[in-house]
Length: 117
Image (cartoon, rainbow, N blue to C red; front, side, top):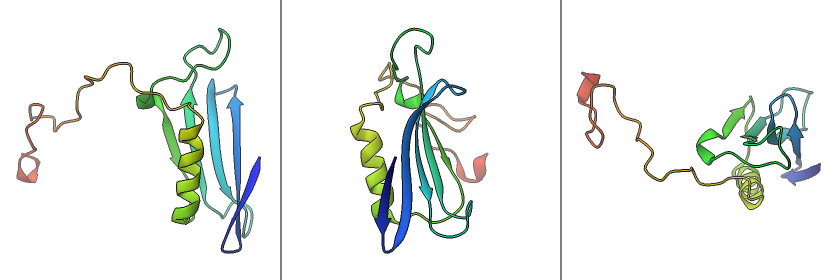
C-alpha cells in the first residue's frame, strides 16, 4: 500500500491478487473526505493460469477498468497508469489481427453511415 498526496488530497494505492476474481488488482482510492465519497479506480488483470503456478496475465484485451465517483487529478491518474504499465502485467493481445469494432451493418474499414442507418 502507498499513499500519494496531490494538493493536500490523499490517495491510497493498492496492488494485490484477488482470489475471488482470479486476477491481479490495482486500486486507487481517494482518502480525503467522508468514507466512500472519494474517487475509486481499479484495474483487474485476469490470471491466465489461476490454478497452475504463479500469476500469468491475460492479454490486454481482457483487462477491465472500474471507475467510481469522484474526480482524480491528471497527475495522480497518470502516476497510477504508469504504475500499472511498469508492472509488466499489461501484455499485448495474443494476435495482432483482432477484428475491429464496427457498426453492425458496416464492413470493416467502412465508417458508419450518418444517423446509424
